[in-house]
Length: 170
Image (tube, rainbow, N blue to C red; front, side, top):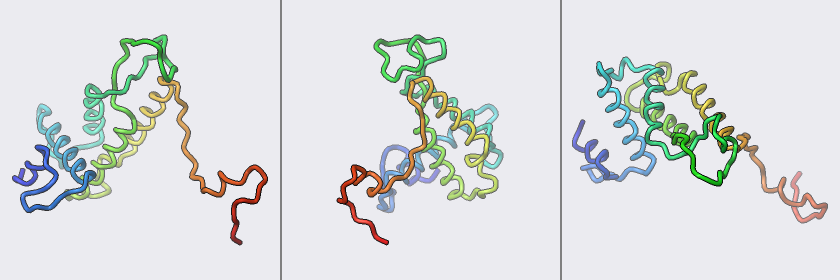
């Protein structure tokens, strides 16, 4: 690892050349280095060129131990309740949104580091299926129905009371 890369991993947001990275770029580099470390720590170590979607799935499951989102198990008395009244022993997991953002950053970093879109393990169907399952499971466990938000324009939300306060162009 170059010294400027090491500086970034250890908390700085600028390189030795004085270039300041955006928060997104810093996070992407940190995530990429963390994933590389994960592959190196496997026994036997896995070179990035041999990494596949199974390694990515194992990495996502490994990250669950550091999660902060309570996901109620099906037998829990609070299963399906968005705001349970008392604590329980259900596990903490990585939130779906965090995993989704992480995969987006790693997918971009893979290609920026010489990988081709065709071989990108972060873009595989298995990863998309896993993320969908996590989203649905967490929504059910927390009693929060997940619905895709429809894009709305301001005109749709205004003037529905019969008044003619909104302008329409034809």
